[in-house]
Length: 418
Ligand SMILES: *Cc1c(COP(=O)(O)O)cnc(C)c1O
Ligand SMILES: [Zn+2]
Image (cartoon, rainbow, N blue to C red; front, side, top):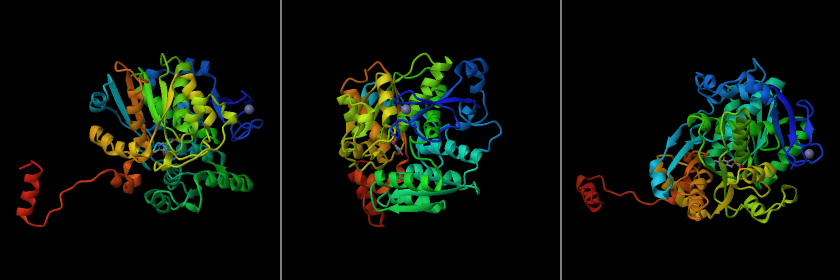
């Protein structure tokens, strides 16, 4: 395990001892999300990346030594993380980029990257003896919490989701047996309700960004990218952004590795937002400090990146700023089109919010934010089966045939296959 040295506020650098604070900065409130910091000199002296690379633990827990988990702690049993990193030459060729890798986090147990954060928060809940763990979610964070806590009889998840969440995500919650509040309102409203009730009832909240352990969980995606590429990082990593917690987690993971001296440089982080939910892209362009960001619109078919007031706004702006990255926005039409494009170039079926990253990569390349001789890692954050109705909207085709050989022959002849 890595012993937590302190928690540091992203806005003012305010420092707290590990037991002093559960969520955000006492001075700066909700925007003052916290970084979990370790004694890096001690870790550097004790750990060795080659020893780690020989680990037989094929899940995010292979990085246990870099995570804030006490020795001997119980861990949620489902196999989160260690998701495939594919070489994607057809994407590279289509976009005229030297090399593209695709990390498929849709392969996680509940079908999205959110499993990484839920796993760590649940490990923490087990350690501290919490019974109720709450979360507000556009769907995936909740599904992750529900799935991973199902085999843990001492934990009861209570979930706040917009009633408009895709049916597959709501089905997941109910199938896994979580207590589900279907909020007749937006994600942002569900979030605020969850915060209020959780504080009142002293529940442990898994809420994105607000709980600093969510970032630590998500950083394991960055650790895996580094290890899977033999510790030679790509020039850029492209990821879709809603609350900004995934991009912040990637930044934390790469930064930890840099502190340890295990990687030589940190990739540029390119955040992709839906044009109808682009508060962070707007703030980045205008140079608005995180503390001054006001809620904007959240109107996109990509439900997982629909956030009017991104909860991890400060860390997300820092991630892009410090790495020399950028934000790009993509309209819903391009997000929808990206679903079959990505699937046909890679074999990976992404939900709208995840396909948005591919649409954003295309835009970033077209705008010269990525040069042809560069290398890129594209992160697929969620599985396409999460939202079949939207995927179906993006594709037409199929040959309607009568159940007769002649009819099939005619169709195949028309298609040029016979
Ligand atoms: C949550 C999520 C995102 C966005 O992550 P943030 O941390 O909210 O920026 C992107 N894609 C999918 C599939 C997600 O579930
Ligand atoms: Zn502070």
